[in-house]
Image 1 (cartoon, one colour):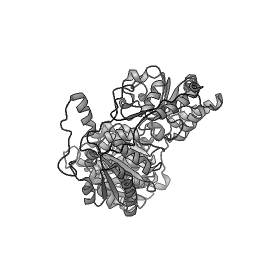
Image 2 (image 1 turned 120 degrees about the horizontal axis):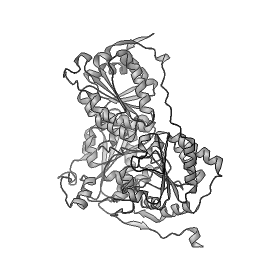
Image 3 (image 1 turned 135 degrees about the horizontal axis):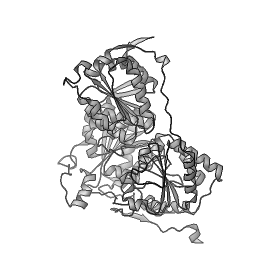
Image 4 (image 1 turned 120 degrees about the vertical axis):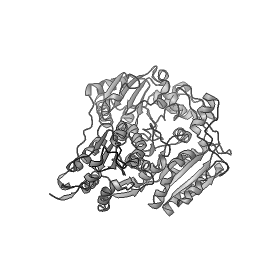
Length: 580
C-alpha cells in the first residue's frame, strides 16, 4: 500500500470529492497541509486576506456549485475568525468544510501558543467538529466530513488537525477509496397522497419554494409540477431563481421586507400553501396570525425538527425536496390530467400587472429603485449576484429580477456585513464563464474590502455595484420611525461628496478600477463600462452610486401593513369573467 503523509491523503480525498480550489491563509500550524497542496495540481489554493473572507469565499463556491466548499486556517485566532462564516453556512444550509491547524497533541490543554479549544468554540454552528488525534483516521475523517456536509440538511463541518498529526506518515491508497454515499430522505407515500388531495381541493393554491429546492437541485421538477397543476409559485429569498421571474406562474417574493406588492396581495388571497424547503423566517412571515389566517399549509422539509418550529402546519412531510416533488408530480399524473389555467392563475397575472412600484425616477440624488432598473437592464438573465444585509439588499429583493437557480446568492439568515465580495470571489472561481456582480452598501463594503486585493492578485474579474448613502441605512430607518432618533448611524464625513471614505480610491489602491455615478442617466453606461473593463483587465471594478441619503425601504410588521415611502403603481384591471 502506498505510504504518504496524512495531508497528502487529505488532499487526495478533497480532489476526489470534487474540490478544485481552496481558500485560506497559511500559518505555522497548517504548513504540512499547504505542502501537500503545493504538490497536487488538481486543487488551486487562493490566499485570502482574512479567514472570515476564506469561509465566505468557500461559501460562495459551494452555493454556485452545489458541492462542498473548503476554507483553511492555522491555529488560534484563525479558527475564531472563521466562526462568522461557519454560522452563515450553518444558518443557510450550505455544505462547507473548514480545516484548522492545531498545536501538537502534547501541547493540548497546556495553554500552549494558539492552542485554543476551537472544536468547542465552533460546536453550535457546525454539523460536526472533529479533533483528529490518530493519524490513520485522517482520510476517513475527511470522507465522513464530506458525507455529513452533504447529507440531510446540508451544512458546515470543522476538522482540527494537530501539527504532529499532519506530519505523520500513514498507509493509504486513494485508488481503493471512494466517496461515501449520501441517502436522500424519501417521502411517505400516504402523506404525499394527502398533500395532493389538499392541493387539488384548494381554490387559490400557491407553492412556496424555499432554498431547500435549490439545495436538492429540484427547480426543474418544481416548474414541471407547477405547470402540470397550474399552481402559482412564490420563491422565498433563499429560493429565488427556482422559477424564472418572467414565468406566467411566478408570483414574486412574499415578506415584510423583501417583497413585491403583488406577491403579498396574492399570498393574502390564497387559501392553501405548499411550502417546500422553506423555514418560515420571521422577515418572510411577519405577524403569524395574518400570515396563517384563512389558509391551510403543507410543510415539506428534509429536517424533521423544522416542521412545527414556527407554527403547526396542517400536514408535515419529512423528505428530500426533489424526491418529494417527484412523488407529487408522479402521483398527480396518475390521478388527474394536465390542468388548464383557471381564474386564480388569471387573477395572479392581473395582480402582478396592477400592483407595482415605480422604478423609472430620474431625480437627483438617485432613487434606489432606479439603480435596480439599470441593473436589470444591463445584466440580463445570466449574471450571478451576491448580496448581504442592509437596505440595499431589501431594495434588491424588491426590484431585481432573477431567472435561474444559484444566480441570486444572499446570506439570508445570519446576514454578516461584508459577505458579498468574498462570496463573489468564490462564485467566480466556481463559474469562471459566468458574469458575477456583487451588490453592496457602502458600510458593508468596508467590512471585508481587503478581499478585493485577492481578486486583483488572482485576476478574478467581477463587477461591484455600491449603493452609497453614507448611513447604516437599515438601522437608521427603524431608529427614525420607532425611536425618533438619528444616533450612531451616520458614517459620513467631509470626503467623497460628504459620504466619507473614497471607495473608488480604495479599490484603485488595491489595483482595481472604479467609477462614481451621481446622475441616473449615467447608470447604465457606467455598468456597461464596468462589465467591459472587468473582462478586459481581469479585475474587480466598482460602480459607486450616490443614492438619496435618507431613502427608506417599504416594510412593515405584517403582510397587510407594508408602509410605502415612494410612488406606487395601482392599475384597475378586471378579470375576463368580470369584463363580460
